[in-house]
Image (cartoon, rainbow, N blue to C red; front, side, top):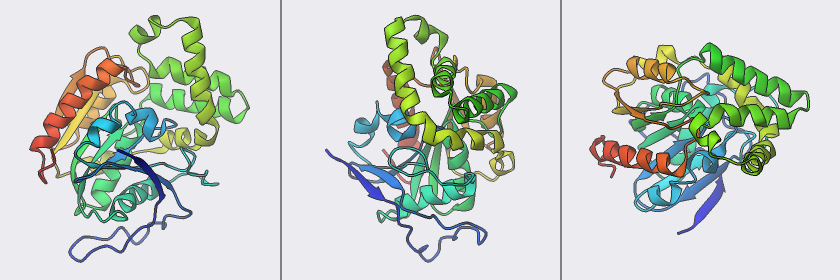
Length: 287
């Protein structure tokens, strides 16, 4: 099984499917897209700063056993260059869909995590003929005060050159209290260093976190939706994720006890079982 990285090149909208809004800005410069596996498409929308592997690396091989997994990197993540201007949610949503259609897939479910949930929701409302199901983990429709302040601090520290301090704050917020208590000082330093390495180019993601508002999109979601809430999330509070679920008609809601914003291997395995069970019953016959 191989992982392929390719540029994102949007294709024309096939007959019978609604094109994106005419106000959309066309995707500019090539984006890095991770493509792995074979079978029906499954599109991944990652969170702020993490990148596709940062969020889904523990389950990517498993998902690719029976899907073509498609994960575009936002500007500033992975091999995608920074945008040079503030990010727009509509652009990320359009680029997400374009990444899948460029591989020849016309319809597909989308899995979103954190900021990726807002990207997935916006993609579903801008491209309703494309998206067949949504899985939204640790998501928010609009930033609550905790998330807003955290994103502002990470962005401010990063832009002032304090990337290590920004990375420490990100780790403190993203790992559950239980998981952090298990780590040695050396292990914590290693995770901070790993976070710092990719944080600088991705600071624009945290700016977008504070500007996202998809509350008006939620009632327009008509596809099967599963919302997953890690119960020890200190970046996106569980109550915020619950409100996201409550706003989507008919959305299923499940909790991952003890999981933080970034999940351990055990919690991610639990997540995988629940997500596969949901997708097996979702529209489109996705396994």
